Length: 545
Image 1 (cartoon, one colour):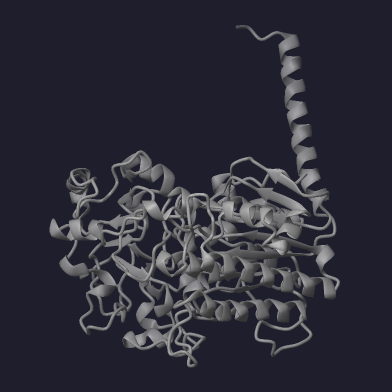
Image 2 (tube, rainbow, N blue to C red):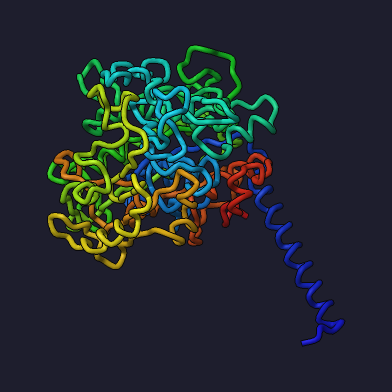
């Protein structure tokens, strides 16, 4: 059809209206956060949206309720396809999915890397990267984790190598992240700004610094798997013990609000422009055995005793932090974001299936991976787990309530897929992936969602079993995360600011990735300065006008 002058004029008018609306929308977001000088980001691992709705309704989390009355509560917030802590936190701090950040799990695989012991990069490529509790020097030679700070340094046996510009260089966690973080953007564009973060692993979470290695000024080096001298166990044995670990992070934030560093040893510092922490208490309570009061009583998210107590603890901790902000006259200029890196699955204990790690067993039985888990970091010449003497080029499988498969021999992919398809049922050797919400992802669909496996970091195959299935026979836990089951991925998200007019509920489906550009927008910075936001087109959260 020929375009007339009137239709051209109409088109220009429509475009002008759209541009004007976009400008008003951006301005409205900016007006919402007028006077904001800092952002406090809190991740309560395991906190589902349903947990928030239920506790507010029952008046058992008054501090969360108060925050929701001065902000936006999102009822449809989700993780970026995978719900491990690494991709969940990376979404919050970079605005990107694993496709851009390269973070799939805290223990993963990269086909381009060389073993930690291969300092010349002359051996086989492909390394099982473990940036977890063993990343601290305490983990060297499989040693006991005896220090809360992980020993005070990196474990060289956990640091792989890469060829870069002809040189063989170590790859620390901050080098492993493929895109920049909000911390780096803030430090680059707000002169004098300070940043701070506290998390569960002392050295594995070094990646929050971003590729520069210097994004966080005050990074609390605390290790949840360290042995507490008072109990002779780590802090994950029972949720009340985890509270003591989380209390360390609460105190770190209180110290920072008081103008000190996380440890409270340095005074006269500026309050961080972006700071925050991660709570583990709820996650530990959710995983605890239902027979011992862990998890939930039903599919409606009715909390069992441990979960109810954990939510009350976290809510009380939030109250202490908000009270400190108010006491220092900082609350009115602080945006508070409460969310979670991941949920926990299953909520309905009736759907729980623990058949053991049938996925790994199936792969090993068919010679797709070395038998008895002897691949990567597990196949060490010394016999000490994760000591850097493992074999390179072995492939890897990571399982929780998901299965991520990096093949040893990638030419076997179609054969592996055929084997998996032949064992979808819930028999003793089956994958329990035969329901409508289960799937096996590979090929073009996997590449579109998570990146091309040919590049080196993306798994060849992802197995998402039926909701409720955990690839374990553990007698210590009845819940897990990592995949894309509904209970894993549907999370709490509240963005609160005293200057925001009243509490509101936003029902738009949003992703955790949208938190990062929203943080920058709140501080009057350009979200496009985040590389992942620019690449993936990640928008600011809606409903903040």
